[in-house]
Length: 194
Image (cartoon, rainbow, N blue to C red):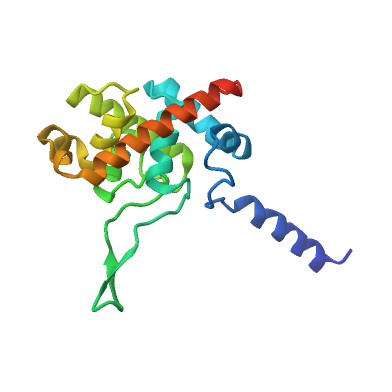
């Protein structure tokens, strides 16, 4: 085998090791299928559950709503005059759709500057951290998926002010997140992953 051919094989192998999977799992309707297809998700959720007490089905339901499990998900661009891109609707990025400022606070207080919003472990840890702060500030229990989602979406201050009450669409979405959490919990119990 020539040296060039060997070098190309090594580069291909090393390149494939460094790639990250940002696409969504195939079946988002079944929690067991998600965790079977992506075992790193199961480890990330288990770690967050141990560290913060956040139930895996709650994390999964919120990540489904925020990013549909797409690791590098971003909000759509805004356009002036319908054609000129003028930036994104927000700075949200990754599985958790964490905003720049909140992510910077998490990095400063917990994870360090190397934490990456497109990494499922960091995203699950971030959500666990955020949700425990929600408990401390608002009293919403970790297993109250609906109200945890409302506080996650509108921020803890917005949740306490009740800004979500005038957003019928957000109340509907929070109810859907709650229902997905119940479904994921039932599925995980049935397949023995809970």
